[in-house]
Length: 179
Image (cartoon, rainbow, N blue to C red; front, side):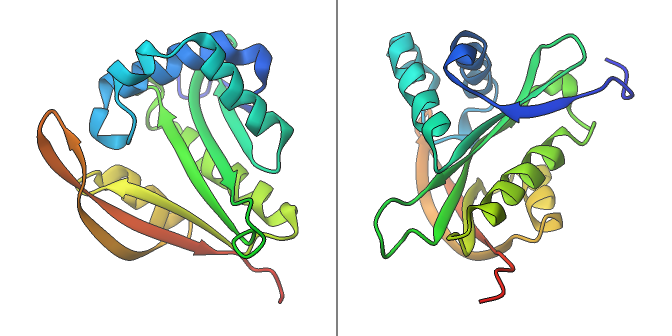
């Protein structure tokens, strides 16, 4: 795939259920330690579960984004889930970040994170965006720190992948809200 091929980042909606599910399942299969959901768990869920996930993001206040290559193929995803409780409504969580291996190194991850942060800043109530990254995933950690996230904690044995414990680093990015 040429590095100059255009990539479009846009909100995903219910109409994207089939390609989103396929992309998500591939990401879970290829990089199981990067996610808290397992490939087997997600395979067992019906398409209606994917539609519910997309509907929640489509209806807001969060967002689920997709990056599409010049041929219209989904090559990356990232979401922003916003806390619903009044005393936590100032927090959002970046989730579901993935870039197809064949599209890596093209700035797609950065474009997705930047769009999540732009959406968070425009929300008006959000003051911070949180995320977790599996310890040892240096490429993701470099991306997030380059986008202004800071590590604030480490959860040992956060997930068990194939019986092996994987720690998660917790990161936060404070938004410049002027408050």
